[in-house]
Figure 1: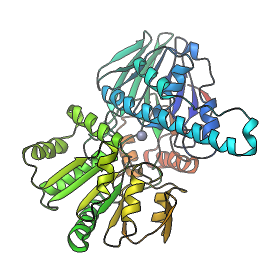
Figure 2: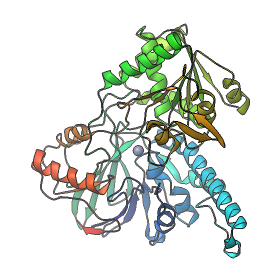
Figure 3: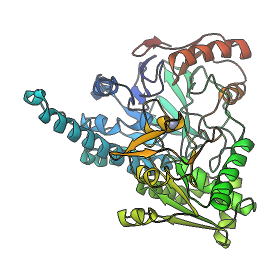
Figure 4: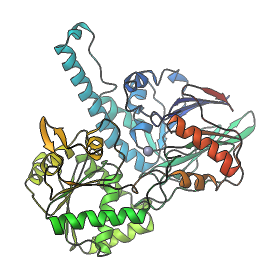
Length: 468
Ligand SMILES: [Zn+2]
């Protein structure tokens, strides 16, 4: 049996693992590379192997860095099944469509710029895939519930377990039989932070012959949940009650937006916040919230409690979803008393830019960052203390109060990861540390040896093939 690391090896995006046994060949994840100048070329090269030989694909979750090349895979001719959980399938309908839309827009922009420059004789840039191709890829995706064993090939048994990362996220347990011998491979997918709103905690796994484990935050400890919640309460009360302005919360549409909504409901339920008007301004955020509501079977006990409270009395909190452009624009006129959740999470695109334009320059308002702000983004410039930022060709002074909340991560931190690994009854024969920046993954691989005494823990190189 062989495994080739086609992505998320020494980096955090492009998850894609190609497994070959004497009987079958399959992929686990088919993610897009994101960020950096190299991403486009890497995405174009990513599926450069014999797709005809591929029998099936397994997807751990809906995030684009794990699923974003599915439309390209099917556009290149793959016609086999793609297995994932039902909630992931529902989220992919929204996310792949949106991803394709972004690809089309970027290609359009690149071509426009080329036309204006000297390079107009060069060939047009084509989108990585189109909206039509993304929509067409959906019919290959099949949902299988957590805990249900299935057999995508006669020599393979499989089971999805809850990874507690985002709605529908899965750990893959896989038993491969080759020449009469069966071995178990576990793919961690992205593991969630225990205690995070809505989703369950990551399922402990007790055995594997071969393990691939993520290491996104293998070098970090998240801020405590209590501190995070206290800061959120302070930011909202100080802004709405004392200063008399608005609170703007940039948030990813899928996952984070729902987490914040649930947190706000819970805080009103606990009487720590009162009389909130919450505006969710993101069409994808609305769809992802609807999908979250349709999958209450996946919620943890706390989420069910909060929901049944919210369902019975709406006194303390009113949530308004801005679906149409006009609904969104109407929010611009609200001068005080609003909590506005909008995307994109790093303020690079989308409706959040309007809300920053209307609120960032007012000292009675606050901006609450709840997620990582990557270098080069508008969010990062604001967090790093810029006095002025450019939004929609206008210079906006930064006068609002800024908060950065560290505890809302959807990823396990170093101790959460070690805690999950510590549930294995015996060490896997081989462990591959994946899905982390190179130095982080290497550091974390060493830590696994030191803390748990495991041997055979390595960080695979991008493109490396390892005989198992
Ligand atoms: Zn993820």
